[in-house]
Amino acid sequence: MNSLKLVLFFLMLPCWLAAQETVDLFIWAGQSNAQGYIGDAREYPNDEEALDNGILLNYTVSAKESSNGDWIPMQAQKGRFPAGHFGPEVSFARELKKAGYHPAIFKYTRGGTGLKKDWKSPGDGGIYDAMVADLKKAVENLEQRGQLVNIRGFIWIQGETDAGEDEAAKNYEKNLSQLIAHLRSEVVKNEALKVILGVDEQHYFVVERPIVLEAQKSIARGDKNIVFTSMLDLEKADVTHLTSAGLVLHGKRIFKGFKQVEPNLDNNKTW
Image (cartoon, rainbow, N blue to C red):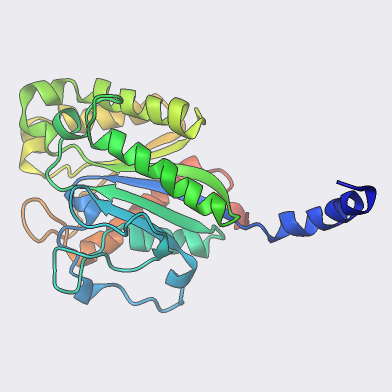
C-alpha cells in the first residue's frame, strides 16, 4: 500500500467504524413454551410502535421448520398453525428495542425435549451441539454483513420433560450447569454472560418432581449473572402450554428478569 492509499485508509477508518452497527444478540432456547407451541400467528401481537422491522430473527425448530439460517425481521415463524406461530421472544425483543438495544434473536427450540436425552451434554451430538454449530454460522453471517456482534444473553425455558423421569430430574442441576458453563467458556467466551432461566412451575411433572424447579433457582442463587423467572399465573391453553396472551406476558417477564442482571439497561443506552 503506497503512502497516499495509506493516508486515505486511516482517514476513512473512523467513518467505516461509525457505520458498523452493533447487534445485541440473544440466544433463545428450550422446549414448547420457548417455541410458542400455542402461539397462533393469527393472534400475533400488534406492532403498534413499528418495532419488528428493527429486530433480527434467526429461528430453528429442531428437525422441523427454520429460517434456513437467514436473518429476517421479527415475525411469526412457519409451522404449528396455517399462519405460523410465535413465542415470548416477540414481546421480549420489543422491550429490548424500546430500551435502546439493537436486538437479534437466535431462537433454537423443540417441544417435548429433555436436557438429558435430547439436548445432551456438549460434545454428545444432541440438539445443543447442533444449536452451537448453527449459532456460529449465524454470527458469521452477521459479521460478513459488516455488523459487530455482541452476545448479550442466553434464555433457557425448559425442564418439564426432565421432571418426568427420576434420573433426569436428579441430574438436572448438574447437566444445566454444565451446558451454561460450556456455552460461556467455549462458545461465547464470556464467563459473565447473562442467563435467564424459566420452567413451568405448574406443570404436573414439575409438581411431582420439583427438584428441577429448585435446580434452576439454585443455579440462579449461585451466580449474580443468572436469574430465574417465574411462569406462575400466566394464562394456559392446557396443562402444558401458554396461550398467545400468556406468551406475550411471559416475554415481558423475561425482559424484567434481564433487567435484574443487566446494570446498563436503565441507562437507555444505544450501543
